[in-house]
Length: 266
Image 1 (spheres, rainbow, N blue to C red):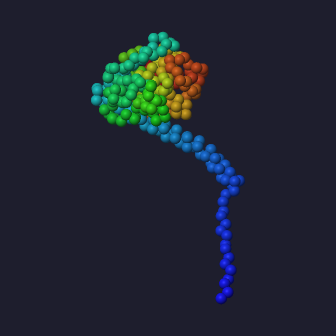
Image 2 (cartoon, rainbow, N blue to C red):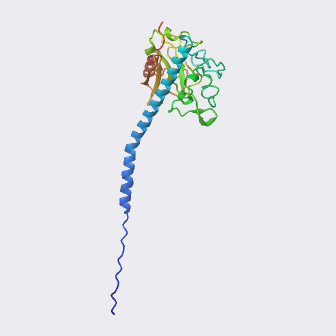
Image 3 (cartoon, helix red, strand yellow):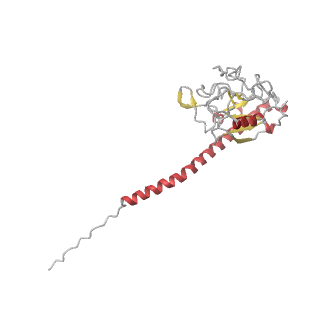
């Protein structure tokens, strides 16, 4: 019997050439460059919405407090003081628990002695609502710990150290509750006690940021108002990492004047 010779089929292995591989990498890089800004904007928008919701919850706590305490607004205790322009806040600590939030934001470790000790905490026992998700600042000396608070309350609301302040909700007439801000995003390098110091345009401090608003939301900040609504406001000028400073130019002055218009009118 005659044997037929066998034939061997060579299996061809296909692979990318170097040029094809470089083209694929270039396409991926281009797509990533196009998508990353969109994803970043979506993340920023989500953080802004969460921050607004947190302020909404805090504002609701204030209303519930007023309902339970004969129309009185939550006490708003100051923990750092200034005497003349360009001076600095003293390193004092709030020990009076008669405050919506005792404590000092850059120094507080945990929530027991500040957020949970405040007199509105019982109306929403959720510490995260006291912090803006875009605020990545940490506790002094503890870079692994995010701070527990990002917001301050307008000094014009039940504050013993303010020249003009509303004690009760029904006293809020000029401006009406819809135009009087209560809580505000506060600049992370400026925040100290839980009171946001700001004075009217006809005061000794008319051209000074006593406390500085945050600009971490696309150069803007979130605020709550006495009628319960919240809103976002974009500043004309960035807000520097400083406090108790004079306005820096016309745009910064316009920002301060806008906020001063949301204060009590005599």
